[in-house]
Figure (cartoon, rainbow, N blue to C red):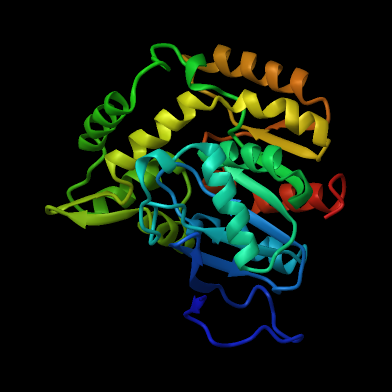
Length: 310
C-alpha cells in the first residue's frame, strides 16, 4: 500500500515546478521515503544520491528537470539514509540495491527510467543498467561509477565487514558538529555557495544526537556499503552496460592531487570499456550536485533531450 503525504492528484494544468511531493512507498517489505517533481505520466528520471545523502539533495536540480525538460523526477532516500529505515547489512551490495530500485519503479508504475546517480549512487546506477537494461533509458553518473576502492592508495579492498564498520565508526567520530550553525558554516565554506535549498538538503542528511549534529547514516550501514563496494567492483558491470548500449554520461570533478592520477587512470578504463559513454569534466569538487546546482540540471537536461532522446 502506498501512503502519500499529498492527496492531490496531478492534473493536466499542474505546474510541475510548483511543488515537491513526498510519500512513503512500500517496496519489498520495507518503506522507502520518496520525493517527486513533475507530472507522473512524464518520462521518468530516478535520482539516487551519494553516501550519507538523501533525495532532497536533488531539490535544486529536480525543479529544472521537471519544468524545463518535462521529466518526472523520483528521488528516494536510500535505505538507512534520510527518512528511509535501514535494511540488513548484507543488503548493501550494489546489485541488491539495484533490484530494490527496480521494485521501487514498479511500485510507482514506472516502466522505464533514466537513472541519475551521484557518487555512490552512480555505482547503483551502473548495477541497475547492467541488471535491468530494458528498464534503463540511459545513465547519468555524477562523479562516480569509475573509481574503484582498490584504486585509492591506502585502501585495503580485502577488508571484511567488521573491519569496514569499525573504520566507519572512527570516521563518524570526526564527522560531528557542536551545533547546526557550525555544521552549516562548514558546508558553506566547503561549497563556496549557499542557498536556502542547499541548507534544507544538507539538514536532511543530519540529526541531533548526544548534543551534537551527526550523520543520519549509521556507521554500521556506512561500513556495509563500503564492504559491498569491495565485493562488487563497479567495473564488473561494464560488459553488460557495453552490450546493452544504453547512452551513458559521466560528469567528473577534479580530484585532490593525492588521488588525481588514480582518477585519471580509472576514467581511461571507463572510456575503454564503455565506448558509447560521453565523459565531461566539470569545475568544482566532488559534490557537483551542490557545487553546480541548477547549472548541473541544464547540462543533464540538454544531454537527455539530445543524445539520450529522453
